[in-house]
Length: 466
Image 1 (cartoon, rainbow, N blue to C red):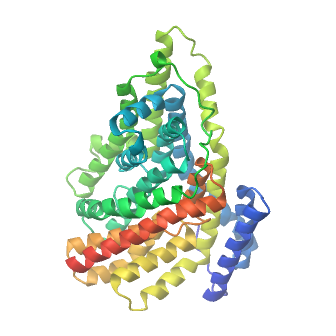
Image 2: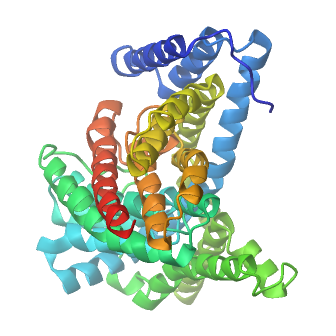
Image 3: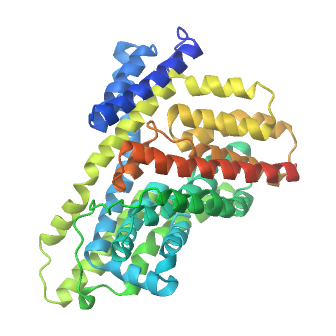
């Protein structure tokens, strides 16, 4: 879709429209209790019309934003939900929970879940990795008792940090590409900055927030819990194989793509072409779900002489049914974000910040933050922020470490300040059973503290390196 021209609306009016739209949206969801799916679409259309998008164009913008978001999210959520449901239903989550608690102890269960999420979140996108980890988080929370917040928020912090600061996640990868940074060095600098950012800005903050929600129940989104007899549970090795398969496939794709970009491997290389197919995140999750069906369900039941038949189909249906509402709400959030993007608010504000003559590292953070707040997508914010700042960086003759620190700053800015136009806000909130206000107090706060700590540390590295 071609970008719409909105010259008849001054920036101050567009900002006012955006603020009023968000307030109305929150009133509809929180006070009027109108379903978020309807609220988001109604406000998206009204905002587009008020911002000057033509009557004949506004529905096209809404459908485009909805389709793009759902096209990205639906496969990840669908395959992830099926994989998670299989792991929980077959007793695999109990096997993993028992192993984790025996190794780390019950007192360190939140930390163990957070560390496991760090490893799992390295190559896998935030939403997909989190959904696959959910059954284990559910099982640990039910076994140990207490608030669900204590176990889920530290894991959310892990996935958020990885998604924001480290390639191969799309935001930092796009920013590094636009700014001509060395991807390998970005990973090293990202780990140097990201691990303390995760611990101080994510894990400790998540633990502190969880104390304010002492009675949060464990959701039953993936079905009612049932205890699987010990002799019917899958082997620990089978569970690990199922969970590691997507990591291996995605790393395979990342490694071959890096070699192809460097010219080491040609574009028509068979291994490279295969990696692009099976290493794409939706395909990797689909293959893992199919392997889980075979190893965790079909083979064990046949060995025990139990029927398989239509039961597997019912299991998949049970996994997909609860996530349909989440996918629709997430798509509606993407539609609202698309409307705000088309108004040009973020670009206008970002250009204005860039022209203020601020220190480059501060300007990069504020420009990217403005894009994040305006349109919601962390990837779009990081890509746009990098594109705006790239000329100044390339003209400044900065060394490779300083450029890598700039990429991390942009990634940090892209994960904070999440609100109702961010599809992740709705996705994570609904999977955790949070209402809108609770999602602000948890997901949004943790993301913003990670953003601020990550910026502070990357600014220090940039100053020292520059």
